[in-house]
Structure formats: structure tokens, C-alpha cells
Length: 112
Length: 111
Image 1: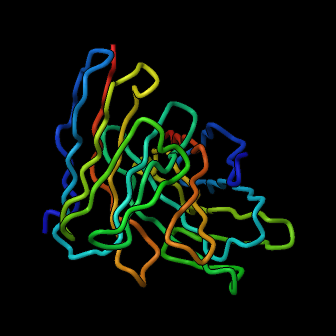
Image 2 (image 1 turned 180 degrees about the horizontal axis):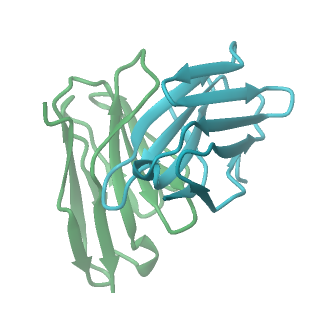
């Protein structure tokens, strides 16, 4: 099993550009999450989904959008990138009845 | 509003000794707690968890203790090994689908 796969691993964006961070899981998990990790700030929840067609905001959703058209995929869209979105982004998934997440390896994004 | 706090950014322990990582929380509705370990350039990996109905959970060298009255949990690693050197995140959930993470503690185990 590949688990949770995130692409790309690294990306540099210019201010105002947009991009989509891809996340796919092959474990048939219903729950999927996007977190960002800033230095010394832990992991902050951006958006999450409890199943295909259902998404909800987390702690820091501004500047981001998500969609969940399939169980496997949960892309994160950045519109009009800003330097404040420079961070490491982690996607995670879990089965409904199990609390522990499985994380992807992350996407390091720099906005210049 | 930091609901889950790890007040020690770093900890240095000699190999073979005990490592104790601490975590405090403010939300009394949290009913399960987890510890994750993170190596550089990798995603966090699940280490151990505890439900609020317990005060201790053990898995090999790792033990998590929960003190609900103090809203405090700790992770004990005995004996510590150089491979344990990583950042450890405490996380908590409140009968919901989301986890709230602490800011992490960097553990260094030296020979």
C-alpha cells in the first residue's frame, strides 16, 4: 500500500499565482485532512472531509479551497498565493472508527 | 487560543535514560489523546494513544500517562535510543473528527 501520497514535494510560487496540492490515499479512508506546519507553531487544520462530497473548514481556511469528488482524492487549492502561505503542508486520512491519522510526506511550499 | 500546549520546545537526554515529554490541554471536552513522532522531511507517524477513560497506556518502550484533573499528559520513553531523536507532537480530539496538535518538542538522544 502506498498510503497517503502528496505531490509535489516542493514548489516555489510567485505572489498572486495559484496552484493545487494533490493528495490521494489508497486505504479507502472516509476522513481526509489538510494541515499546515509553520516553524514553532505545530500543525494547524486547514480543511477536512468526512466523505466524498462533504468538506468543512478547519482553524485556518482563508486563502484555500478544497473539493472531495472521490474517496481517494482531496486536493487543496491555493488562489492568489501570499507569502503568509509559505509553509509545509500535510495531508492525512483515517478510517471513521480509528482516531490515528496516516500522514503523507508533505509538500514544502515557498511563496516569493 | 492554544488548546494543546507543549511548553518545552526541546529536550536532550542521554541514551539509555528516560525521556519525558509533557503536554497540557485546556479543553475539558477532549476525550482522546495521541502522540506522533516526526523525522525531518517526513510526515508525522502515529506513536501511541490514550482514551480519557484510562490514565495509562503502554506500548513497548513508550508509555503515555493522562491526568485529567490537571489536564496534563506525558509520554515516557524508556530506555531512550538515538533513533528516538525526532520532533514529538501531542494531539487531542473531542468526540469529533478533528485533532488539535501541540507545537511539538524536539527530542535529542545523545550517546
